[in-house]
Length: 224
Image (tube, helix red, strand yellow):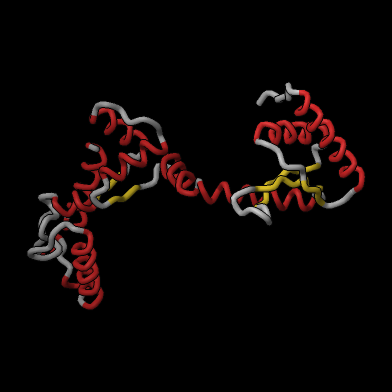
């Protein structure tokens, strides 16, 4: 940002007088000094001049003791350790706000599987938020997603597929609560009676349920 300068004589005088006080404060070695109240334009000029002339000083805002709707500006003289601790705190705050973007980027770069349940609109929202404006054609969107997430699965689509529909029990719908309950019951049943799980040797369709699920999953990933 280009440095700003005051033009009115009273503004120029205010900036010069305040900078003299800041210079005296910097030479004294004191910990902090409250800056005179100023409008946002003059405050910006002061911040820029302090950063330029006294790079070891930091300007920060604090709630005013007399008016909770106003913030006072302070100049703080930090030691090297204090500066590093403050920079690390700022870094952590920034990372806390971009945490899911980091996860999204890692999933995309490492081409890890992504699993949704009825997640088409969720995917639209996240692509718009993290990748940019959505294309106008569905085919273009599908091709872009498939290129970045080659292993993308939607459990609702899997549950409604011809190969897997009804395998979790008669009347089980594809809503997430019903699927979760049915899968948990199936897993408990498998743990108690592992031999009851059908396989090719027991007369299940060729390849068994696991293979059918795999085939549906990969066909979805390729087609999405």
